[in-house]
Every structure is written in structure tokens, then in C-alpha cells.
Image (cartoon, rainbow, N blue to C red; front, side, top):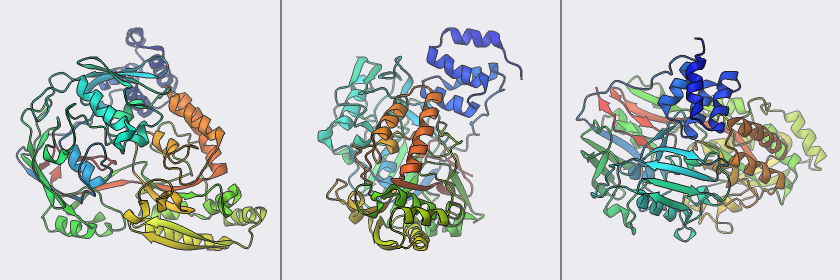
Length: 554
């Protein structure tokens, strides 16, 4: 299609310089249409507007994501893990708990499987010129299940709870260094400003479903969420029984399209195998997350549909950078060169993963610099590095990790691969509670182990991965990695509003981390959800959320 410069000029007149630079990138071919839509949504451009720009730029109509609506009235039955603790929006950190909470409570915006942000409780958002203040316009007429209208006071209170260190919020990993308590300001009943500690080009993801704690609940909330489950979502709580399950019914006062199902039922399981048997036996319709190895039996079952989402979820292998043999970056690089990443993706993960290149920049991110060469297995080079580091004869070391998903098998593969360069790895595989401990330095096998493997869930932008486990003052810096150049690069990336500036800094970060290798990112795994044949309209996210308002049964 040809370009319509008249329409483009009309659109440009009301756009900011930053938005026009993004449009130029699309027209000039510096960024792809996918990157344009995703980054445009981040800057607060509406999806219809992004579609009009794409049409005028000669790219044709965007593919429609709309699906035919199924029949209303079904009961949708879900199998999930048991919530690990009391369900509280401030502290919830496990997949089972956040799945239940998300059925009733909503976010300002939603990070979809394509990483495109879509409006929810906020209708629009925009940054100031340097990205230090983001302004969100709230949707009017939204009611909590308890009856009151959701307004700016509720948003301010909800986010302040999460940003307050005194509350031990799980979202402090997102907000520390980004947003302080008191920095969320009410402009009027339907406008909120976020005044940030520093420029942040990806901030809307911090208050989206990407930050699963950031649900908006009444300003009056004082705790005891399991007694109210008060939210604004398309479903309302019917019954919750700790360790057993939960059920929900349609919210007929919902601000948006009413949910198709009459009810949803959630059954909690302590293991995946009983979930698989329940799905095959017709007792449940959906398994929220299907691990690859445990789920091999159903991956090709004709009566089961696998929904596969590309994600940034991964298993980080950290190595102490300040003591022991891995203090030398050459040793860390040698260990990384032992991994056969293609076998990891094809064998261990059954093709349901993308190769990692020892930085948080997964292939799903538009800002990833794909020109940086992929690290491959090279045992000969690894031996040369070991000799140069003065440890040609190898050494003994303990690898501590958690019994979760395919991590124990991953650890065994690493153990076998590093034998070739003389490293004798002893495996210390713990249950998750023992591994994470109190999740603070000095009281956590995760953060205190000289070498460890930790599961990191999906994020729509790499900000948390860049900061918490890798910055010198990172709250999850298990590698004890301290590098001033890296800290400056990470701050530069996080502060960039422009996609091309993000890409340029991402390339520098990727190259630095390949040189230093404090953490090995071997692969990024796909998020799998299993449904019974005939169940339609199910929309999972790689954050363990499950949107069921359009679900139906054939």
C-alpha cells in the first residue's frame, strides 16, 4: 500500500515530538510494525490511533485479535497451585494466590501476551518530556463490588501501600528506586500523576498487570482481603476455602462487557500430576500453568489444547563475583561456554523455549539488540579460560537450587557439562520454602549461595531483571555483582523514553554482561496453559493470570 502523507500530517499536528519520532521510525523502517504498536501503547497512544497511523504509513490494516463470542452461561473449572499464604494484594507473591486475586481485582492497564498495553481502569496515560511524571486518566463510572465508585483516591491509596517499605510489599522489587510512598498524586477525581524518582520510559508496565500486586482496591482497605475480595472485576467472589478452592459469579454491574460464564470454579492442587488426571478425566477444564517436563503426556493429546505464550520467564544461574573461584570473570565465562543451549531448548524444554544469551534481554523484547552474537557451547575455549584464570585442574563447588518446574534436571545437565572443564559440582536441591528462606541477605539460601538457580517469572519489560538481581544495590543481587558501568547503563536504559535509545543501550548492556557473566540466562521458557477441547475464549498471561470473561464451552 502507498503512504497517505495528508493523513499522516494531520495526525502529526497533535502529537508530541517523542510520538512523532516513533512515527518516523516506522515510516523510515528503523522499527517494525510490531515494535511500533507495542511502544506506541506504552506511550499511551490508543490502539485505534496506532492502527490509523499504520494504515496511513502503508502497512495495511492491523490483524484483528477479536474472536467470535462463545455461548454464555457456562461454568468454567480451573486447576491451579495452592495459594502459599493468605491472599493480600500487598504481599501476594505466588502463582496460586495472585490467580485468585486477579479474578476480582483489576489493574490500570493490562499487559497482553503480545506485550501491548491495553486500557483497563485507566483510559489513557502519557509522560512529561523527560519521563519523570506520568499522568493517568481514569475510567468513570467504575464500581467496586462493595458499591462505591473507583476514583483517584483509591488509586493513590492502592499504590502508596505498595510503595511503602513499612508494609513489606512484594511490589517493592518494582517500586524501589522508581516510585516512593507519597509520590502518587491526585489531580482530580479521575486524574492521577506518578512523580518518579528518576526518568522511566517503561513506567506504565509498573502499574499494569505486569506488576501483579498493583490491583486497585478501595482506599479504606485495612487488611483481611480474604473476608471481602473487593474489586472492580467482571467476577465477584462466591466462596473461598483456604487450601481447597474458590468460586466466582458474574458481576452484572461490571463497567465493561459482561462476562460470558455464569460461574468459575478453582480447585487447588499440591502437584501437577493430579491436575493432569483431573483434566483428562473431565473434572476440570483448564490447567493454569503446564510445566513442560511434567506435562509431556498431554502436549500431544488430541483432547487437550495447549495455549503457548512466548515469554521472558527464565531460570537464572547466579555465581558469586566477589569470592571463590567464580570471582574471576574468566571462570564465569568458561562455565557459560559449557552449556549447550540448543539442547536445552530442544531437549529439556521440548522446543518450548528460546535461547538465552546471558542477559535479561529476551527475544520477546522489542528493545533487545539482536545483532549481538549468540553465545554457543565451546568447551575448548572454556578450558583456555580456566587455564588463564589459574584453575586448569578445576575445583569443587556447590550448586544450590529449588525443586520447581524443570530446575532439578537443568542443574543435572549443568553438573555434567562442567565436568568437561574439571569442575566438580555438588547439587543441593531444596524445597522452595527452604531455598528462598526469608528472601533477605543472610537468611536465604537463594541470596547467600555461591552458585544457585532461581526461577524468575515473566515481565513485559526487563526493568526488574536489570535492577533487582544485577545492580550493585539490587534487592535480589545473589551474584554480588557490583559494576559502576553496568549501573549507569541500566539507569540509562530505564530512563529512555525512545525505543531506539533503549535498543542502543540494550546492546551495550548485552555485551558487558557477556564479558562479565555474573548470571547465566540459558533459555527463556514458553508459558503453557492446557484446556479441554471445546473450551474457548481463555486468555492466560505469562504472569500466571487467567482472564476468563470471554470463556465458553462448546
